[in-house]
Amino acid sequence: MSRSAYSIHPPVFILCPGRSFSSVVCGMLGQHPQLYGLPETNFFVADTVGGLFQRFSGPGDRHRLHGLVRTLAQVHEGEQTEAAAERAWQWLRERLSMTTHELAWYVASQLGQRQMVEKSPSNCAEAAYLARLYQIFPTARFLHLSRHPRSTGKSLYQVRQEQRARRGRDRMPVDGRRMEENWLKVHGHILRFTERLPVGQSLHLQGEQLLADPDYYLQQIAEWLDIRMDAQAIEAMKHPEVSPFATLGPDNARGGNNRKYLEDPRLRTGPPPKVNLSDPLEWMADGSGFSPATMALARRLGYR
Image 1 (tube, helix red, strand yellow):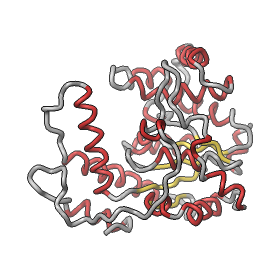
Image 2 (cartoon, rainbow, N blue to C red):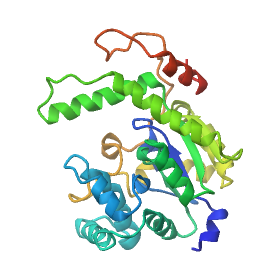
Image 3 (cartoon, helix red, strand yellow):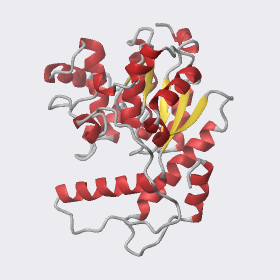
């Protein structure tokens, strides 16, 4: 596919902090016959493939390349066996000087006429990463996905506790305020980025609302993207478990998405949890609540 084709079929990027339903939402969108949902590729945190390897060289970060490896194995060989994943690792090692600009375009070009959908939370961890993304794909569409800061913070806190327990550090306290600071920082980056885009290039959606009424909101997303809105296409998107990236990968590339999603990728619908912005935060030992800045931004996103 030539680059000019992307002016007609631009990629779609889901922008959000971690723990914001991005794995299941990307899996859902990727089942539309005109879309192709990827796991986390982390394309935009470095300028080159070698930079990606360096960025994720630590023992606790190596798994952040799993989504990219699984993607390459799938598009190259149509499967994600351990052997296919090893060949994908080698493909990357042989191209350390390849720019991530070239890498992202290459992956998108392997998907035929289907639009790439990508959801790495790292995309918006820093304003510079969003700038790099936009420079590479200026005609992309951006789905700003949000989750209530209380639900996000509680989920992140539980993850941090589990990680510390696995590493034998369960007696060390988790800094609960960092959960809120990350939510505030990332959504701030996203809002400052999307408010400069032309009308219609971005769409904000509360993840809770999408999961509460997927038929309505999936149709809204399809209309925004100007893709098929028929019942068959909408029904397909309600089955993220069909995605080739909706299971744990081979031993040399296990991850790429939220682990709980990988272990049970089915769509689970239901009303949004009854949470609010004003109560004390259950993960804060001092019983404090959200800062005024967090409350103001959350209200801007439609939360109460």
